[in-house]
Length: 171
Image (cartoon, rainbow, N blue to C red; front, top):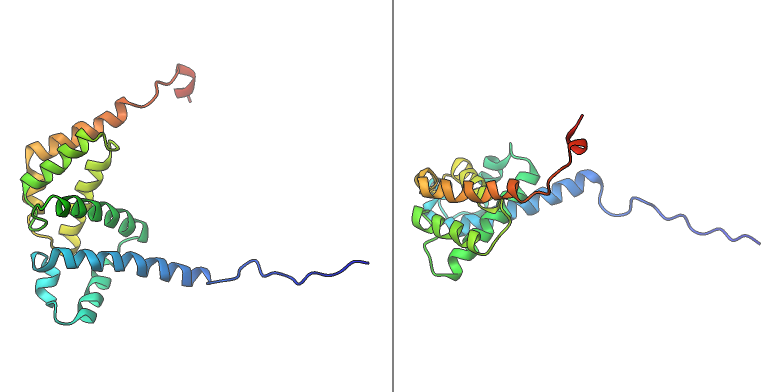
């Protein structure tokens, strides 16, 4: 006759709150490793100093507190890719220079990277400058050639979309 199976809890594992805390902690950890790359060329590191990792980590948590986890993840991944690219080529990571940023954006264009990659990198660099005080960002991003190579790639995104029929765009 019928056997009863043990009931399986559908919510095994961490609670949603714990999952959120864990995801945020992982996002902050990525930024902590990025601080290591930025070093003394980052205002946060200069103010706190490198001698006490826990004080630096807590200062980072406080600096990033108003930012959404998704923002931290997305901008952190983009910044990590930029630093990796520069490191592999032996280029200066920080302070940022217009020449290196332009070279990176030109390389993205030449490699036919996703059209929004340069714009995302600009946003990530600006975020690092605003939230953490990364040196050289303002000057690098103010460069007309950096702005234009980024804009040209972003415009490509709009131009490469599939054409839509009149019926598709009607309300």
